[in-house]
Image (cartoon, rainbow, N blue to C red; front, top):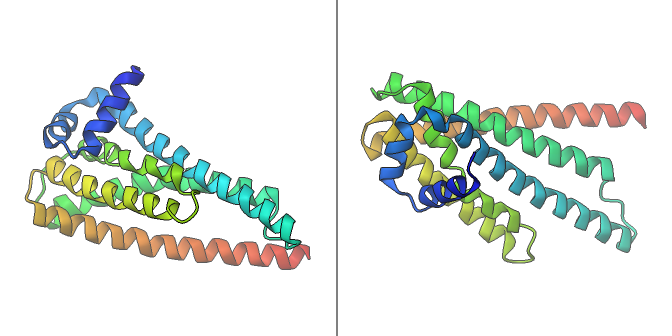
Amino acid sequence: MNTDSIINNMIRAAKLDVDFFNAIEHDESKNTEALLVVIIAAVAMAINNGINGVLALLLGSFAGVKVMGPLSVIVNVAVGLISVVVGYYLWSYLTYFIGTRLFGGEAEPGEVLRTFGYAYSPQVLAILGFIPCLGWIIALAGSIWSLVAGVIAIREAMDFDTTKALLTAGIAWLIVFILNLVVGATIGLSFASFGALTG
């Protein structure tokens, strides 16, 4: 696998290059590379989470306040990594189902996975999220940029118009958001129960 090729493709995706998304849609050899882009974005987010966790530990230690333990930082980073990759598959298949069933899109699941994977490219900016004052703005900009790339990816993979792509992305996002709330609440209750049991 050519590293230069991956970087160039990520740059083209970040530039919202429609011709690139069209080409990727039909190129089955890019399946692994699209997943790798998602993993790179997930690692960038995990690094940011890890740095923020370590900073919280250091500041808490300096101030004499226990914020979280080192194990919590590690778990937070690991869960973040896994959730990005799981979210990619979940959102891709939801998008495929909604786009083809509700809006008459024409695509195979692989086409959506490939184009959607590259749409994660701008999320590498999350690695800068730890920078005081500006970090969260940069990370948010990367997320919004990635969402715009995602709409273009959906439109090109499904071969329909931008309005249908926006509706497909919006419905899929809402479902994923609700699922995240339910899963987050369940995990939070589980940790709270575990903490109460272990004292």
